[in-house]
Image (cartoon, rainbow, N blue to C red; front, top):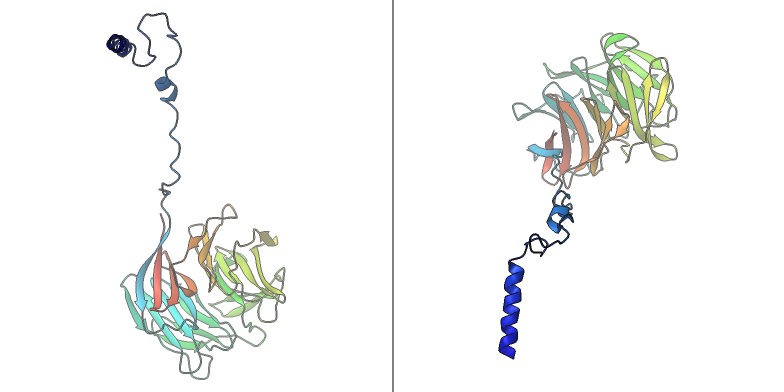
Length: 336
């Protein structure tokens, strides 16, 4: 009996294997021929996303270009600016500690630059928060004193900067025109004591002009010019840091913008191709503002172990200058 049962099972098994491989039915047996098969039902269904698969979208990245090992003091403040194909940087220190150097981003070479006369602040670390500014083919520095730097002859000289114009810890930036007049204009916003004053300086004739007051009193903001429009981000009021953002439109005055996603007080910024890049000195990412849409893009993380981060624009590229234990590092932002 057991042998006969096994024989019957084998016959059934052979019969099943001769059936239609999809529906398990003999062709022409009157089964549900119009019903979709499991294979047919899933042919066009999208595959579920792989949660573990990395995002293939190209991302901005920082590429280390140069390191100056002569300064690795993480307590040292930097002021940085780009002019042409060169990044200029100064270490703000006490007498005898100051450093002023340049890095040619195309040649990959670094050089010492001239220091200010002894009777000026010479990037003094005295709380006045001076900044290097590039305008009209020269460098400018405003803090306790106003100085201009000839980048060809490597010489500093004084400029018009009366006590009425002096603004310690002001935000400084450059627009490419003002009031219908084409040319670089240096813009000063606020200053020590939470000031609302805004000034414009024409480097050619060296004339200071007043502008409408800023909506709130502050110091240490970041000012970035885009054509004839100054953008002002962050700063410090009498009660603490703020993340406010404004732009000045001629004929309309100061217009509010979305707040910065993170603090940029005491930081720096540059504009390139419709994007404003901002960083605070101790931030962990660069904030990116899209000018045409007035919205914030995703932030760009900074390299590890950086402090006193500063941004510069040189040779049409964005550069990050920051200190870590290995020295002063120069990173290029490579955009996708």
